[in-house]
Length: 190
Image (cartoon, rainbow, N blue to C red; front, side, top):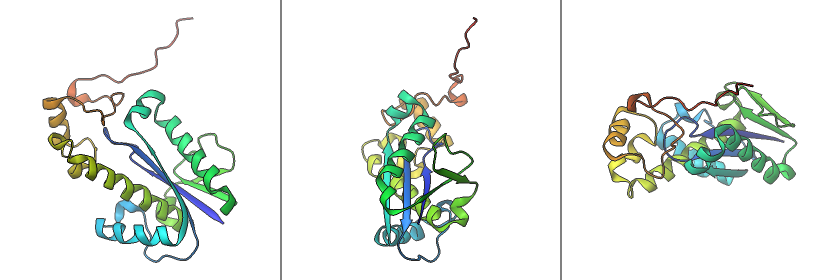
């Protein structure tokens, strides 16, 4: 059986990275890349996916992303999913263009739109992350996380200009709009 893996929250400037792995036990109709489905459709499919699959969802906080980097967080999440679901499948497929150096992991660009297991993982990751952002929005009203889900919209950038970053923001994600330069790795002179 195939385990599909996908993530949500790679690009936002606030909130967690969420990675999901899904092994379907039954067919689910109307699966697709979560980004092309309506919120209502994603919510409906979320419950059906959970009922008809083996799955595992991993959240990584903005703080950990800042500490070890996004790639390491993705790799750790994928490894956790593979370890958790290994007894129920014999193949792991990640949406994207890299295996992060993980043996037994294959990848495919646009797998979230073409492979049902990866589409299901895409939906679980997106809905889980959106629900998290909606939940924390009540404690961070000045940022309107429920509106933009942590992405760098104009309104979100303005809120950061006015209020600074919260503990849900990724400080290593530098913003040109705030006059911040990219944080790079300094090369040795030797």
